Length: 119
Image (tube, rainbow, N blue to C red; front, side, top):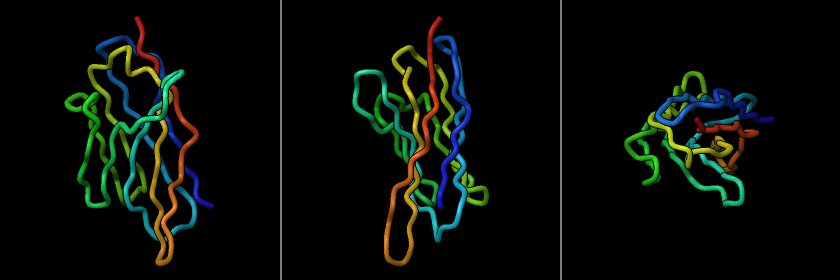
């Protein structure tokens, strides 16, 4: 059974920073891409950032230059460093990991962590 456990959300003032973590545990063959998504109230879930197993990142235009995604393959963990936070960054943030085997690829999701940017 594969589990993703997120941590690091909270309340922060505009201009502040937060660091999210997501650890993957359980029995699996290999983790491919890992990423962060977010969903604000009344809106669809959107991609924030994704990173390949080799460490190549991609970001949505809305967070480019402010957020940094990274991963530690030895710890099966992905991070999201969020700087210069804005009220519009307020959302539930979900991590996602593509778990691959010789015959299948399955996306697993974390439970979500709330990020609130407000003065």
